[in-house]
Image (tube, rainbow, N blue to C red; front, side, top):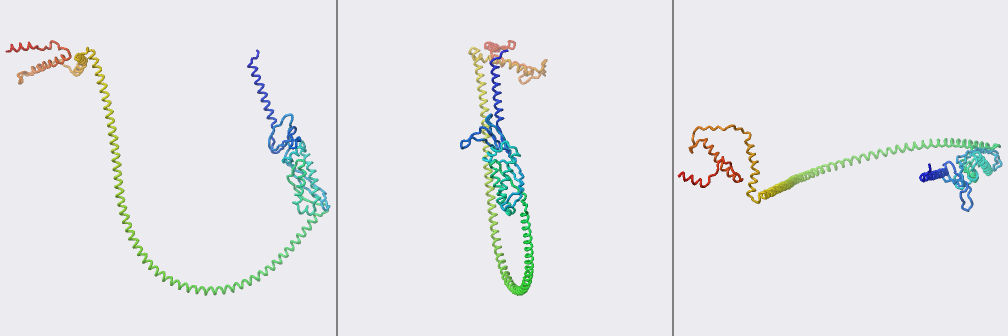
Length: 470
């Protein structure tokens, strides 16, 4: 099956994606990070120095860098401290006395900019044992040099000066190969001739003698001091006793005189106090009476003012309550009246609108009826009555339809009334008298009663009848 353009495009996209992915993987693999306990040394084509010369390596501590393939490579220097045991023997001192200086040095690769570059140039690729041996040789040389410049007494007594000199010289030489001195520990200094031991014994004997002399002097001074102290104590006690007796006598005299003066002054004070108390009591009573009188007046004024204030406040409150109540009632009445007026107005308007519409419709209907009657209003009225006659008749029939009348029995006792007629005759007469009004009603409607109910007499018939009666 042949491949189409779409298949070729898909293959091209896959190839491009594979190339991009491969490039990203290569770039990621060439981006190297430096751990905190190592120095990353990049060598190859790494640029130039400030003076234009080519750099041998680029050192990075605590960072990361991209390593260009082919033209650059990378290795690491370990910053782990190295402990070196330096057992220096038969070192010649300034006094030409050979001494043994057993010591332990702790060194490590330096992270200073220039010193780190020296380490990359001189120790890259070396094993830890090789670095240790190299540093040990430098330390041995510098330690012998320092011992040769100092006397035995200085080495033994001034240990800080010795360590400072060793650290200074060793540190300077170690920086040349990229190392730094971390710690120096000198355990002991001995010599074959026993000079240092003799110095120790001399110092010990001197210290013992000095201690014995100090003890004796302290004992003598203690005995003398004790005797002097006892003498001074006895003298001081005697003088203190005599002075105490004399002081006690003087104190007793002074106490007696003070007691007499005290009693005299107490009597005078009591007299003055009694008089003052009575005067003050009288003044207090007077002031109390005046204060009581003023208090009574003030209380009366306060009660009067309180009473007046209560009356005024109550009156004002009642007045305000009445005004508020009146205003509230007036407002309620006004709102109620306005509501009723509005309701009445709306009701009347609604009734008027309804009545107007009803009359309007009736007028329109009546106009149609008149139009149907050929413009004759009387005929239109007759049509309206004829239209309603069936409903009127139906209402009358409904009123009496449930009344069952099989027959009508008239009991007449034969008694006659004032007009000389019986009750039956009056009933029939009343029935017949109701026919003319019915005739008029039917006549107004344009209809006539049946002939069997009778008919109106004409004027001629009435005249002939009257003539015959005459």
